[in-house]
Length: 247
Length: 376
Image (cartoon, rainbow over all chains, first blue to last red; front, side):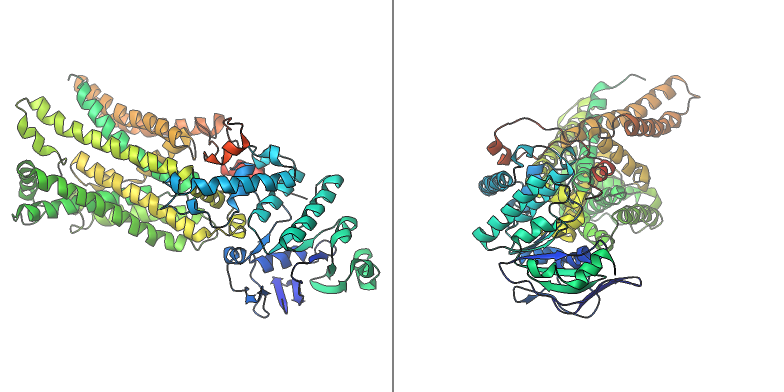
């Protein structure tokens, strides 16, 4: 992405950000609260429109004028900082919803189960594997509001992964999750990257977990990228230290 | 005045079937799709007037006779004679009228949903539709060219009116055509129910519920929210148009008095009473409201015949009071209706091999909102 800005009223939440995320990498985005990380993710995924200037490219295609669902179809998935789940649907239904190319999602096909049931069972198998990986299989029949905050995070991650994304934007995937599970989530992320080559761009406050798995880290403060580099070098960056501790 | 049980049953079945179609339509739009349609009566009324006008014009055309102005009393009587004398014409015109009413419902569904799809808050849609419904009624009532204006368009008999010529007894003459028509209405209502059940218990049902529960999250998972909203409005509007055409053929006249906003709210009470996104529950809710509707009508007439000074309107309007009380009691004691929403029944669950039915909680939009994690 190049020269991307997003202002709310007089506040420039994202201020002329230019960055690129390498295909197949796990890239971190860190910064103090209010630094614009989630807004940046909203702009990349299309939930928020960027201000006029700048461009976002994904997989060689310009995507900043596309609607969020079209960006997802191209392979750009995301999770939200506050889990956005479908509260009237079970965990299994939430997970299965995200799968692409469902024949039964067409109203002309849906009334004829024989035309989509085969695919439905295949998707259920995939959903089951996905849920096993994240240890949420037992939650399959529960509604999201019958699960804990940490479990909701996992369900959301499971949903995002069901869409076969080429790149996943994960906004604080381990917030509210037990420490052991936080490690497991990152192991799953690393596993997914190795197996499928998925690219991950992750906002995370648990730096000790994040730094074990990321290739590159961007640091953000007051809407700008203030540092970029390997985890071991970025922690020594004076601008980042100042941003966190105040200067 | 003696109580005519057969007549009551036929009327009840006819009205029940028509209300059930309206309720199923609203349940698809709001219960599953989260589109609050406060203008259900627009599509219902449109179906009635399009169906009635089609019948009034096509009957003489197909029978090869000219009846002049369709609003004249002589034309009304001429239509009844044609319906008696030409069975094939009568039935085929009815089929065409139903199709035209459904097409008109679908087209207007697209038109009215166009601005609504572009507003962020779906409750604006409800306001647009509420106003559109009332505008339709007032314009139709004051325009002679549309459904004969204030007087309404009469002389629309059931498609089986000609059967009365085969029976000597006046009771059978009256009950056989209307009874058969009631059966047809109930069969069509069951077909709509079946379609709604299949749509609801499929990936499309998941898609609808996702748009209902959180449109931003649905968009972020690749769902084209605008398209889904438009689709469900079209499906719902087509069904409501069908209900309107069935109604005008049942009642015999397309009159604007029958398409007041209170009709829409009765359909809402049916859905809230039965349960959101639960088609079986909706049929129960419809039964209760139809019983209230027919019961108030019949008891008003019977009381007036016994006590000439008694005003039947007193009971007719008391019906709305009872509906309001039902609504209030539901909001206090049973927000999810008599039958709460159930999980989507597809074969996906068979893999998980528990086969237990899961009652969903939090199907009320406000409750769903409460369930969301607010901090992380």
